[in-house]
Image 1: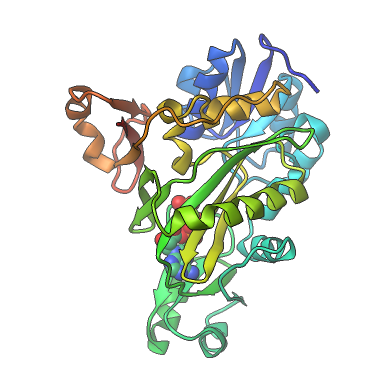
Image 2: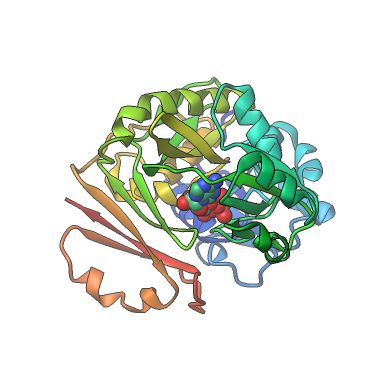
Length: 352
Ligand code: ATP
Ligand code: MG
């Protein structure tokens, strides 16, 4: 299926990922229509149209899908059934969505294609935590099975007495316990896959998190990441192939002493790929648009020896003047308005 420039792309989700997708689509001559529940999502400020409706409003989704030429998403916590009904018009498809929105389903799926994951147990109530401690040891991390992002819905258990508070803290009807992974570093594989199964991969950045939120992505990633990237890329390709994924897919990895271990999958463009806007010949956003519209993929070659992307979180974005004054530095602000603590407001990419 080819969706030619001039057509309309529907994007479900109105955050910064949708905003940067819409900007890349506009450069290729497309119009974008955003579907999001908020009244002024930052993606709609750079798009041709906005439908304001809940993500689970099947009737609104149907009308939205009828008004556009292809539907994609920047956010994976969406009801699968109404979107599966869109069939081939939705890219990536429902299988990618379903496999990435529940952490237990995701781990079983990754293991089924030969990827290693942290030892884990399903947690359906506070009483399951003791059994998880017996099986996995301490410390362990409790996470909500669904709807987690930026470290939200997570609580560490370092002592059996913390089990009850941790369960209450995640505030979810169903959870997962994961063994603590003693990793050497974190990195991600970001790839794009076409309908025909062609894959393009970018270099893998070293990712540093603070308080569960990505702080920086840096290239070159150095050791031990560079030694593990080949194996990680092979796992990521198997994941993308098994899903029949169309578009950009991200796999977050822990680099461990005994090799790469999959942390999680995002069936979409990802924060650890923002560096590609200036740091690669084709950005993850343009590549996603190319893939879902059936255009040929572009080169993923790095444009600079060193690239570093730093997120601007909360009121850090108020200091926009400093990066503007620096050579080799590119400022991105998402136009989100209120700078709440922990909210991703923008990012800065430095090339060297
Ligand atoms: P995002 O959507 O931003 O990727 P998330 O809420 O889905 O975040 P995770 O990726 O599961 O969260 O975890 C966030 C970070 O917490 C990881 O990048 C890692 O630094 C740490 N972490 C998560 N799980 C484990 C684990 N089992 N062992 C050690 N560290 C972990
Ligand atoms: Mg993560």
